[in-house]
Length: 112
Length: 116
Image 1 (cartoon, each protein chain N blue to C red):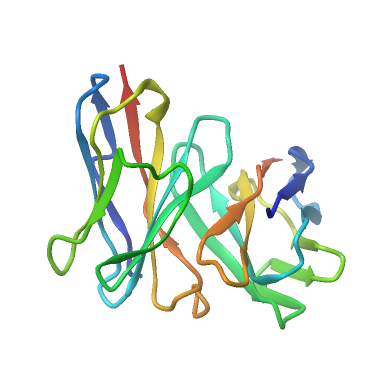
Image 2: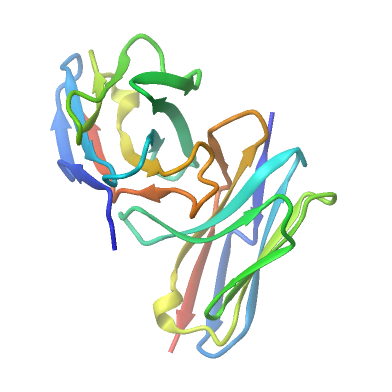
């Protein structure tokens, strides 16, 4: 059974810092991995999708990497802004399944 | 940008009552999903739906739950007899391909269900 863990659980940084959020998963037989952003009381916004054959994906100030063999993904946020404050979730889809398995998230606060 | 729309945004119901949560997926998507998030916990998969059939479901999705696509646009989740532990945020999602392998999943903004 896939277990997805995210560390740290919470992170507080001043504006402008580069930061890394970590995601680890126990079953490396994944089809893809997706990073989401969740604002308080709101839905999930897809940020990046990495297929199992890919090593990384980039969108603007965001870069996500995937190392299947070690069961890890990282989300790198460059030059953080207060508007980046949210909870970041990673989720894996395993081969043979259609469901996403989510981590518990990292709650990010970027202060001005 | 295309959106997944969920209604209502918040629903309060008495224990034992039936509720129907509604979703309008993105129009050209073929795969539809329900997830839920109990306050302070992980987002959990409930069910996936394709070609008018359930294609995968979790242990949570027992006989109290059902899904339907009553017309060409709506996708609904029905809980027959709500329990206190059904209180959660329910998210609908859709994707264009089976495993979201195009641009991933698009989630709605959720329906907060409170059972009293």
